[in-house]
Image (cartoon, rainbow, N blue to C red; front, side):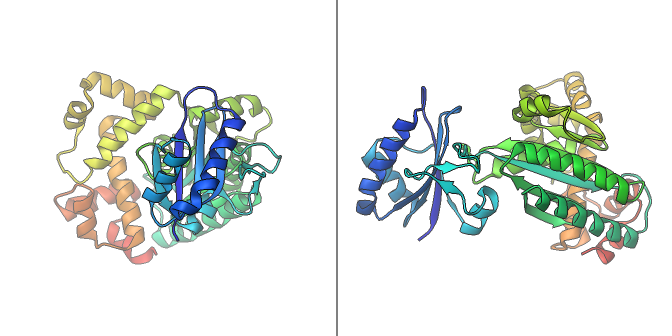
Length: 365
């Protein structure tokens, strides 16, 4: 039977006794609904409970909850066992009430810390075959360090980009410092690194399994400056406590909650309108509800780039990823990222990366 993960946002103070009673009631009724409650993750601070359930369908899982204690989930999603282990970890400890524990024996909140690392050569001409060789070395170095710090690579669609998940936020930041140090020593002198670290829950009310976490982490990585690590607001406290002990050769940017909200808002509009050639400052201002002055001030303050430059950078970056995946031809990719002319797209790509997309498409993969 399929596996489901659900998410409950409870009101007031969450006590362990409340969770035990609800779970005991679920166990008593699970046979009647053909489901099996396997494991819980409890976040007392945020009053959240995540339940891993085996069942014929989501409706049966919800019905058992309703009959047992009346607490319906805010969201429930089917999850593949392999992805579940990749994001949450394997061989996790549980207590007698199926509540997941950390290695130290504390309650596991279900929050996981995600890191995205990009290697770039912006506006630097470099032979494509040299680039491919350097990018492969980058990937190997980063992958080894992620494993060393107990991380798991969850996305590696392209030689110049890796996304990984950690159970420990501290391990994530220690890993990031070591990655920057190693890449500085071993990678081409013109290479630029961008990183983002974001701690997030598995489900939100609207997004699926870690979808919101991955989106925000990638957007954070996009706004990072050269050789900079961008941290989400919910790892700010840990960074402030551990800053003197951590190895960070380059700059750190810690986002405020309003900045995170703005990033989510602006990037959703940018990505939704990316295939529209008419996407520009005026249309973006209209969609967001800001004047050109306000938009310019917010974008430049957050990213160090103008609005037009950010839009073009996002177009080019997506084109770069699509070319590397080789699922579409160059003309199709040009139209997908908002260019009506493949020749103009090629010109802009060369201006951004130093070589035409045809050369990149030929050698990469």
